[in-house]
Image 1 (cartoon, protein in one colour):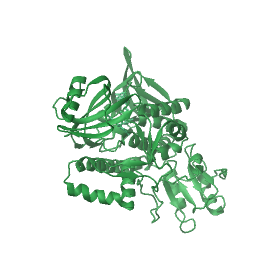
Image 2: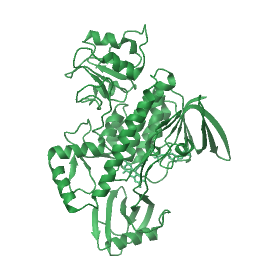
Image 3: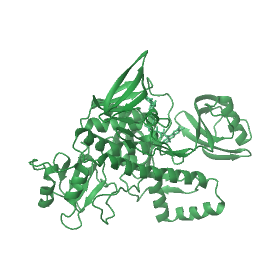
Image 4: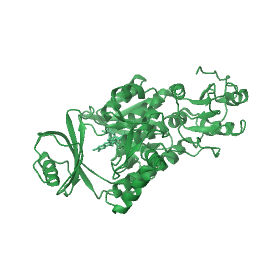
Length: 476
Ligand SMILES: Cc1cc2nc3c(=O)[nH]c(=O)nc-3n(C[C@H](O)[C@H](O)[C@H](O)COP(=O)(O)OP(=O)(O)OC[C@H]3O[C@@H](n4cnc5c(N)ncnc54)[C@H](O)[C@@H]3O)c2cc1C
């Protein structure tokens, strides 16, 4: 009996594997492909994804390799969204291939002992009260594997989701686009160009360009180069010779979300849990966000230290966040077709500093705020606790919670003593004492003595363990 089987080694599965291993949970990752594909879908990490990865020491190496752009985009608006002054430690979007992010996450997970099996495809799944059994096809044969939990990180057509009988309601694609990573014979201007038959969006890539254009055909299989070139030429109304294609794809604007992110012992994360229009290019980022929220909760559940409700808060928090992503990406698509008055009005809002910041925080998920227990009226509660100089992020690299400001407030440290296995205690800074969950979100802020701290600790980390050692203060 394995602790956890993760199906799919994309961004969600690989980050989750690293999180589970950090907590010492036995983890097998089953990936149907023998090797990572030679094309790259996503090319960016947003500010929130970087904030999260920094909490496990995973951001700096990526930042050193990528290129920083100090804004985000809201499709359909002629205004960029500035990230300076938003709620983040990383006020920029990072240009970096998704494949490179996956390599870094894979190295992190396997170095910590995750058992990654490539060329192993999950074909079936059956769960009972004690565990989940998956049927795996590998090479010329196959085998069965049983785990206490199975997490479907297996993308939009998730076998795990279907086999577990989890509904995937939403809207089917009504608009389609063609994408080509190609080498045109002659240079094309970057950005959006309009022609007599439509538009093309040209994005520079290392050694080639990515061209996206509307797909007016009825074919749904992968496009051929002839078909792709014809669509580009129709849009621009002139010949556009293309020397070579590296990757051609067709994608739609379907928006769907799993009705349950957790069903018994089966859990979903990333594209398996939600699909949305590509506006804003957030798929990788939301997948990482899911995995980061899930990792510590599932680990504590497997180890038997979690309160019974903890895994359910993964559904509550991330399903709500997913609804938000579906809503704002669909709104961006609709804006492209909206009456000019709507675009003008929103453009005015986006040009106002407060409106610009609110939209920037919406499309990047920096406005994410989870409900906390006990509830309180404090602007930090439920939001990601900013690390500032990096001290707080560094304290979270072991995947534990942090009680900041407790060492010099003896009664708080004493209250936290029974949770010493879960919470690091650290001296305060210029901010009031606060409790930060392992995923970096503020679970409690001192407003009136120690009121609410014990309840917050018990809510997130389970009942107090009597006789626990006094927490060792961590050097700042
Ligand atoms: C054309 C295109 C462009 C995109 N551009 C961006 C962008 O710029 N920025 C961005 O953030 N996002 C972008 N995305 C979205 C992004 O690629 C996805 O949202 C992201 O990869 C989701 O990660 P995931 O781990 O949930 O799933 P995936 O990355 O899809 O990984 C799922 C894995 O599961 C494996 N798998 C599936 N079924 C099984 C099975 N039965 N058994 C074993 N393994 C299985 C698959 O082989 C795959 O490796 C783009 C997507 C597309 C299609």
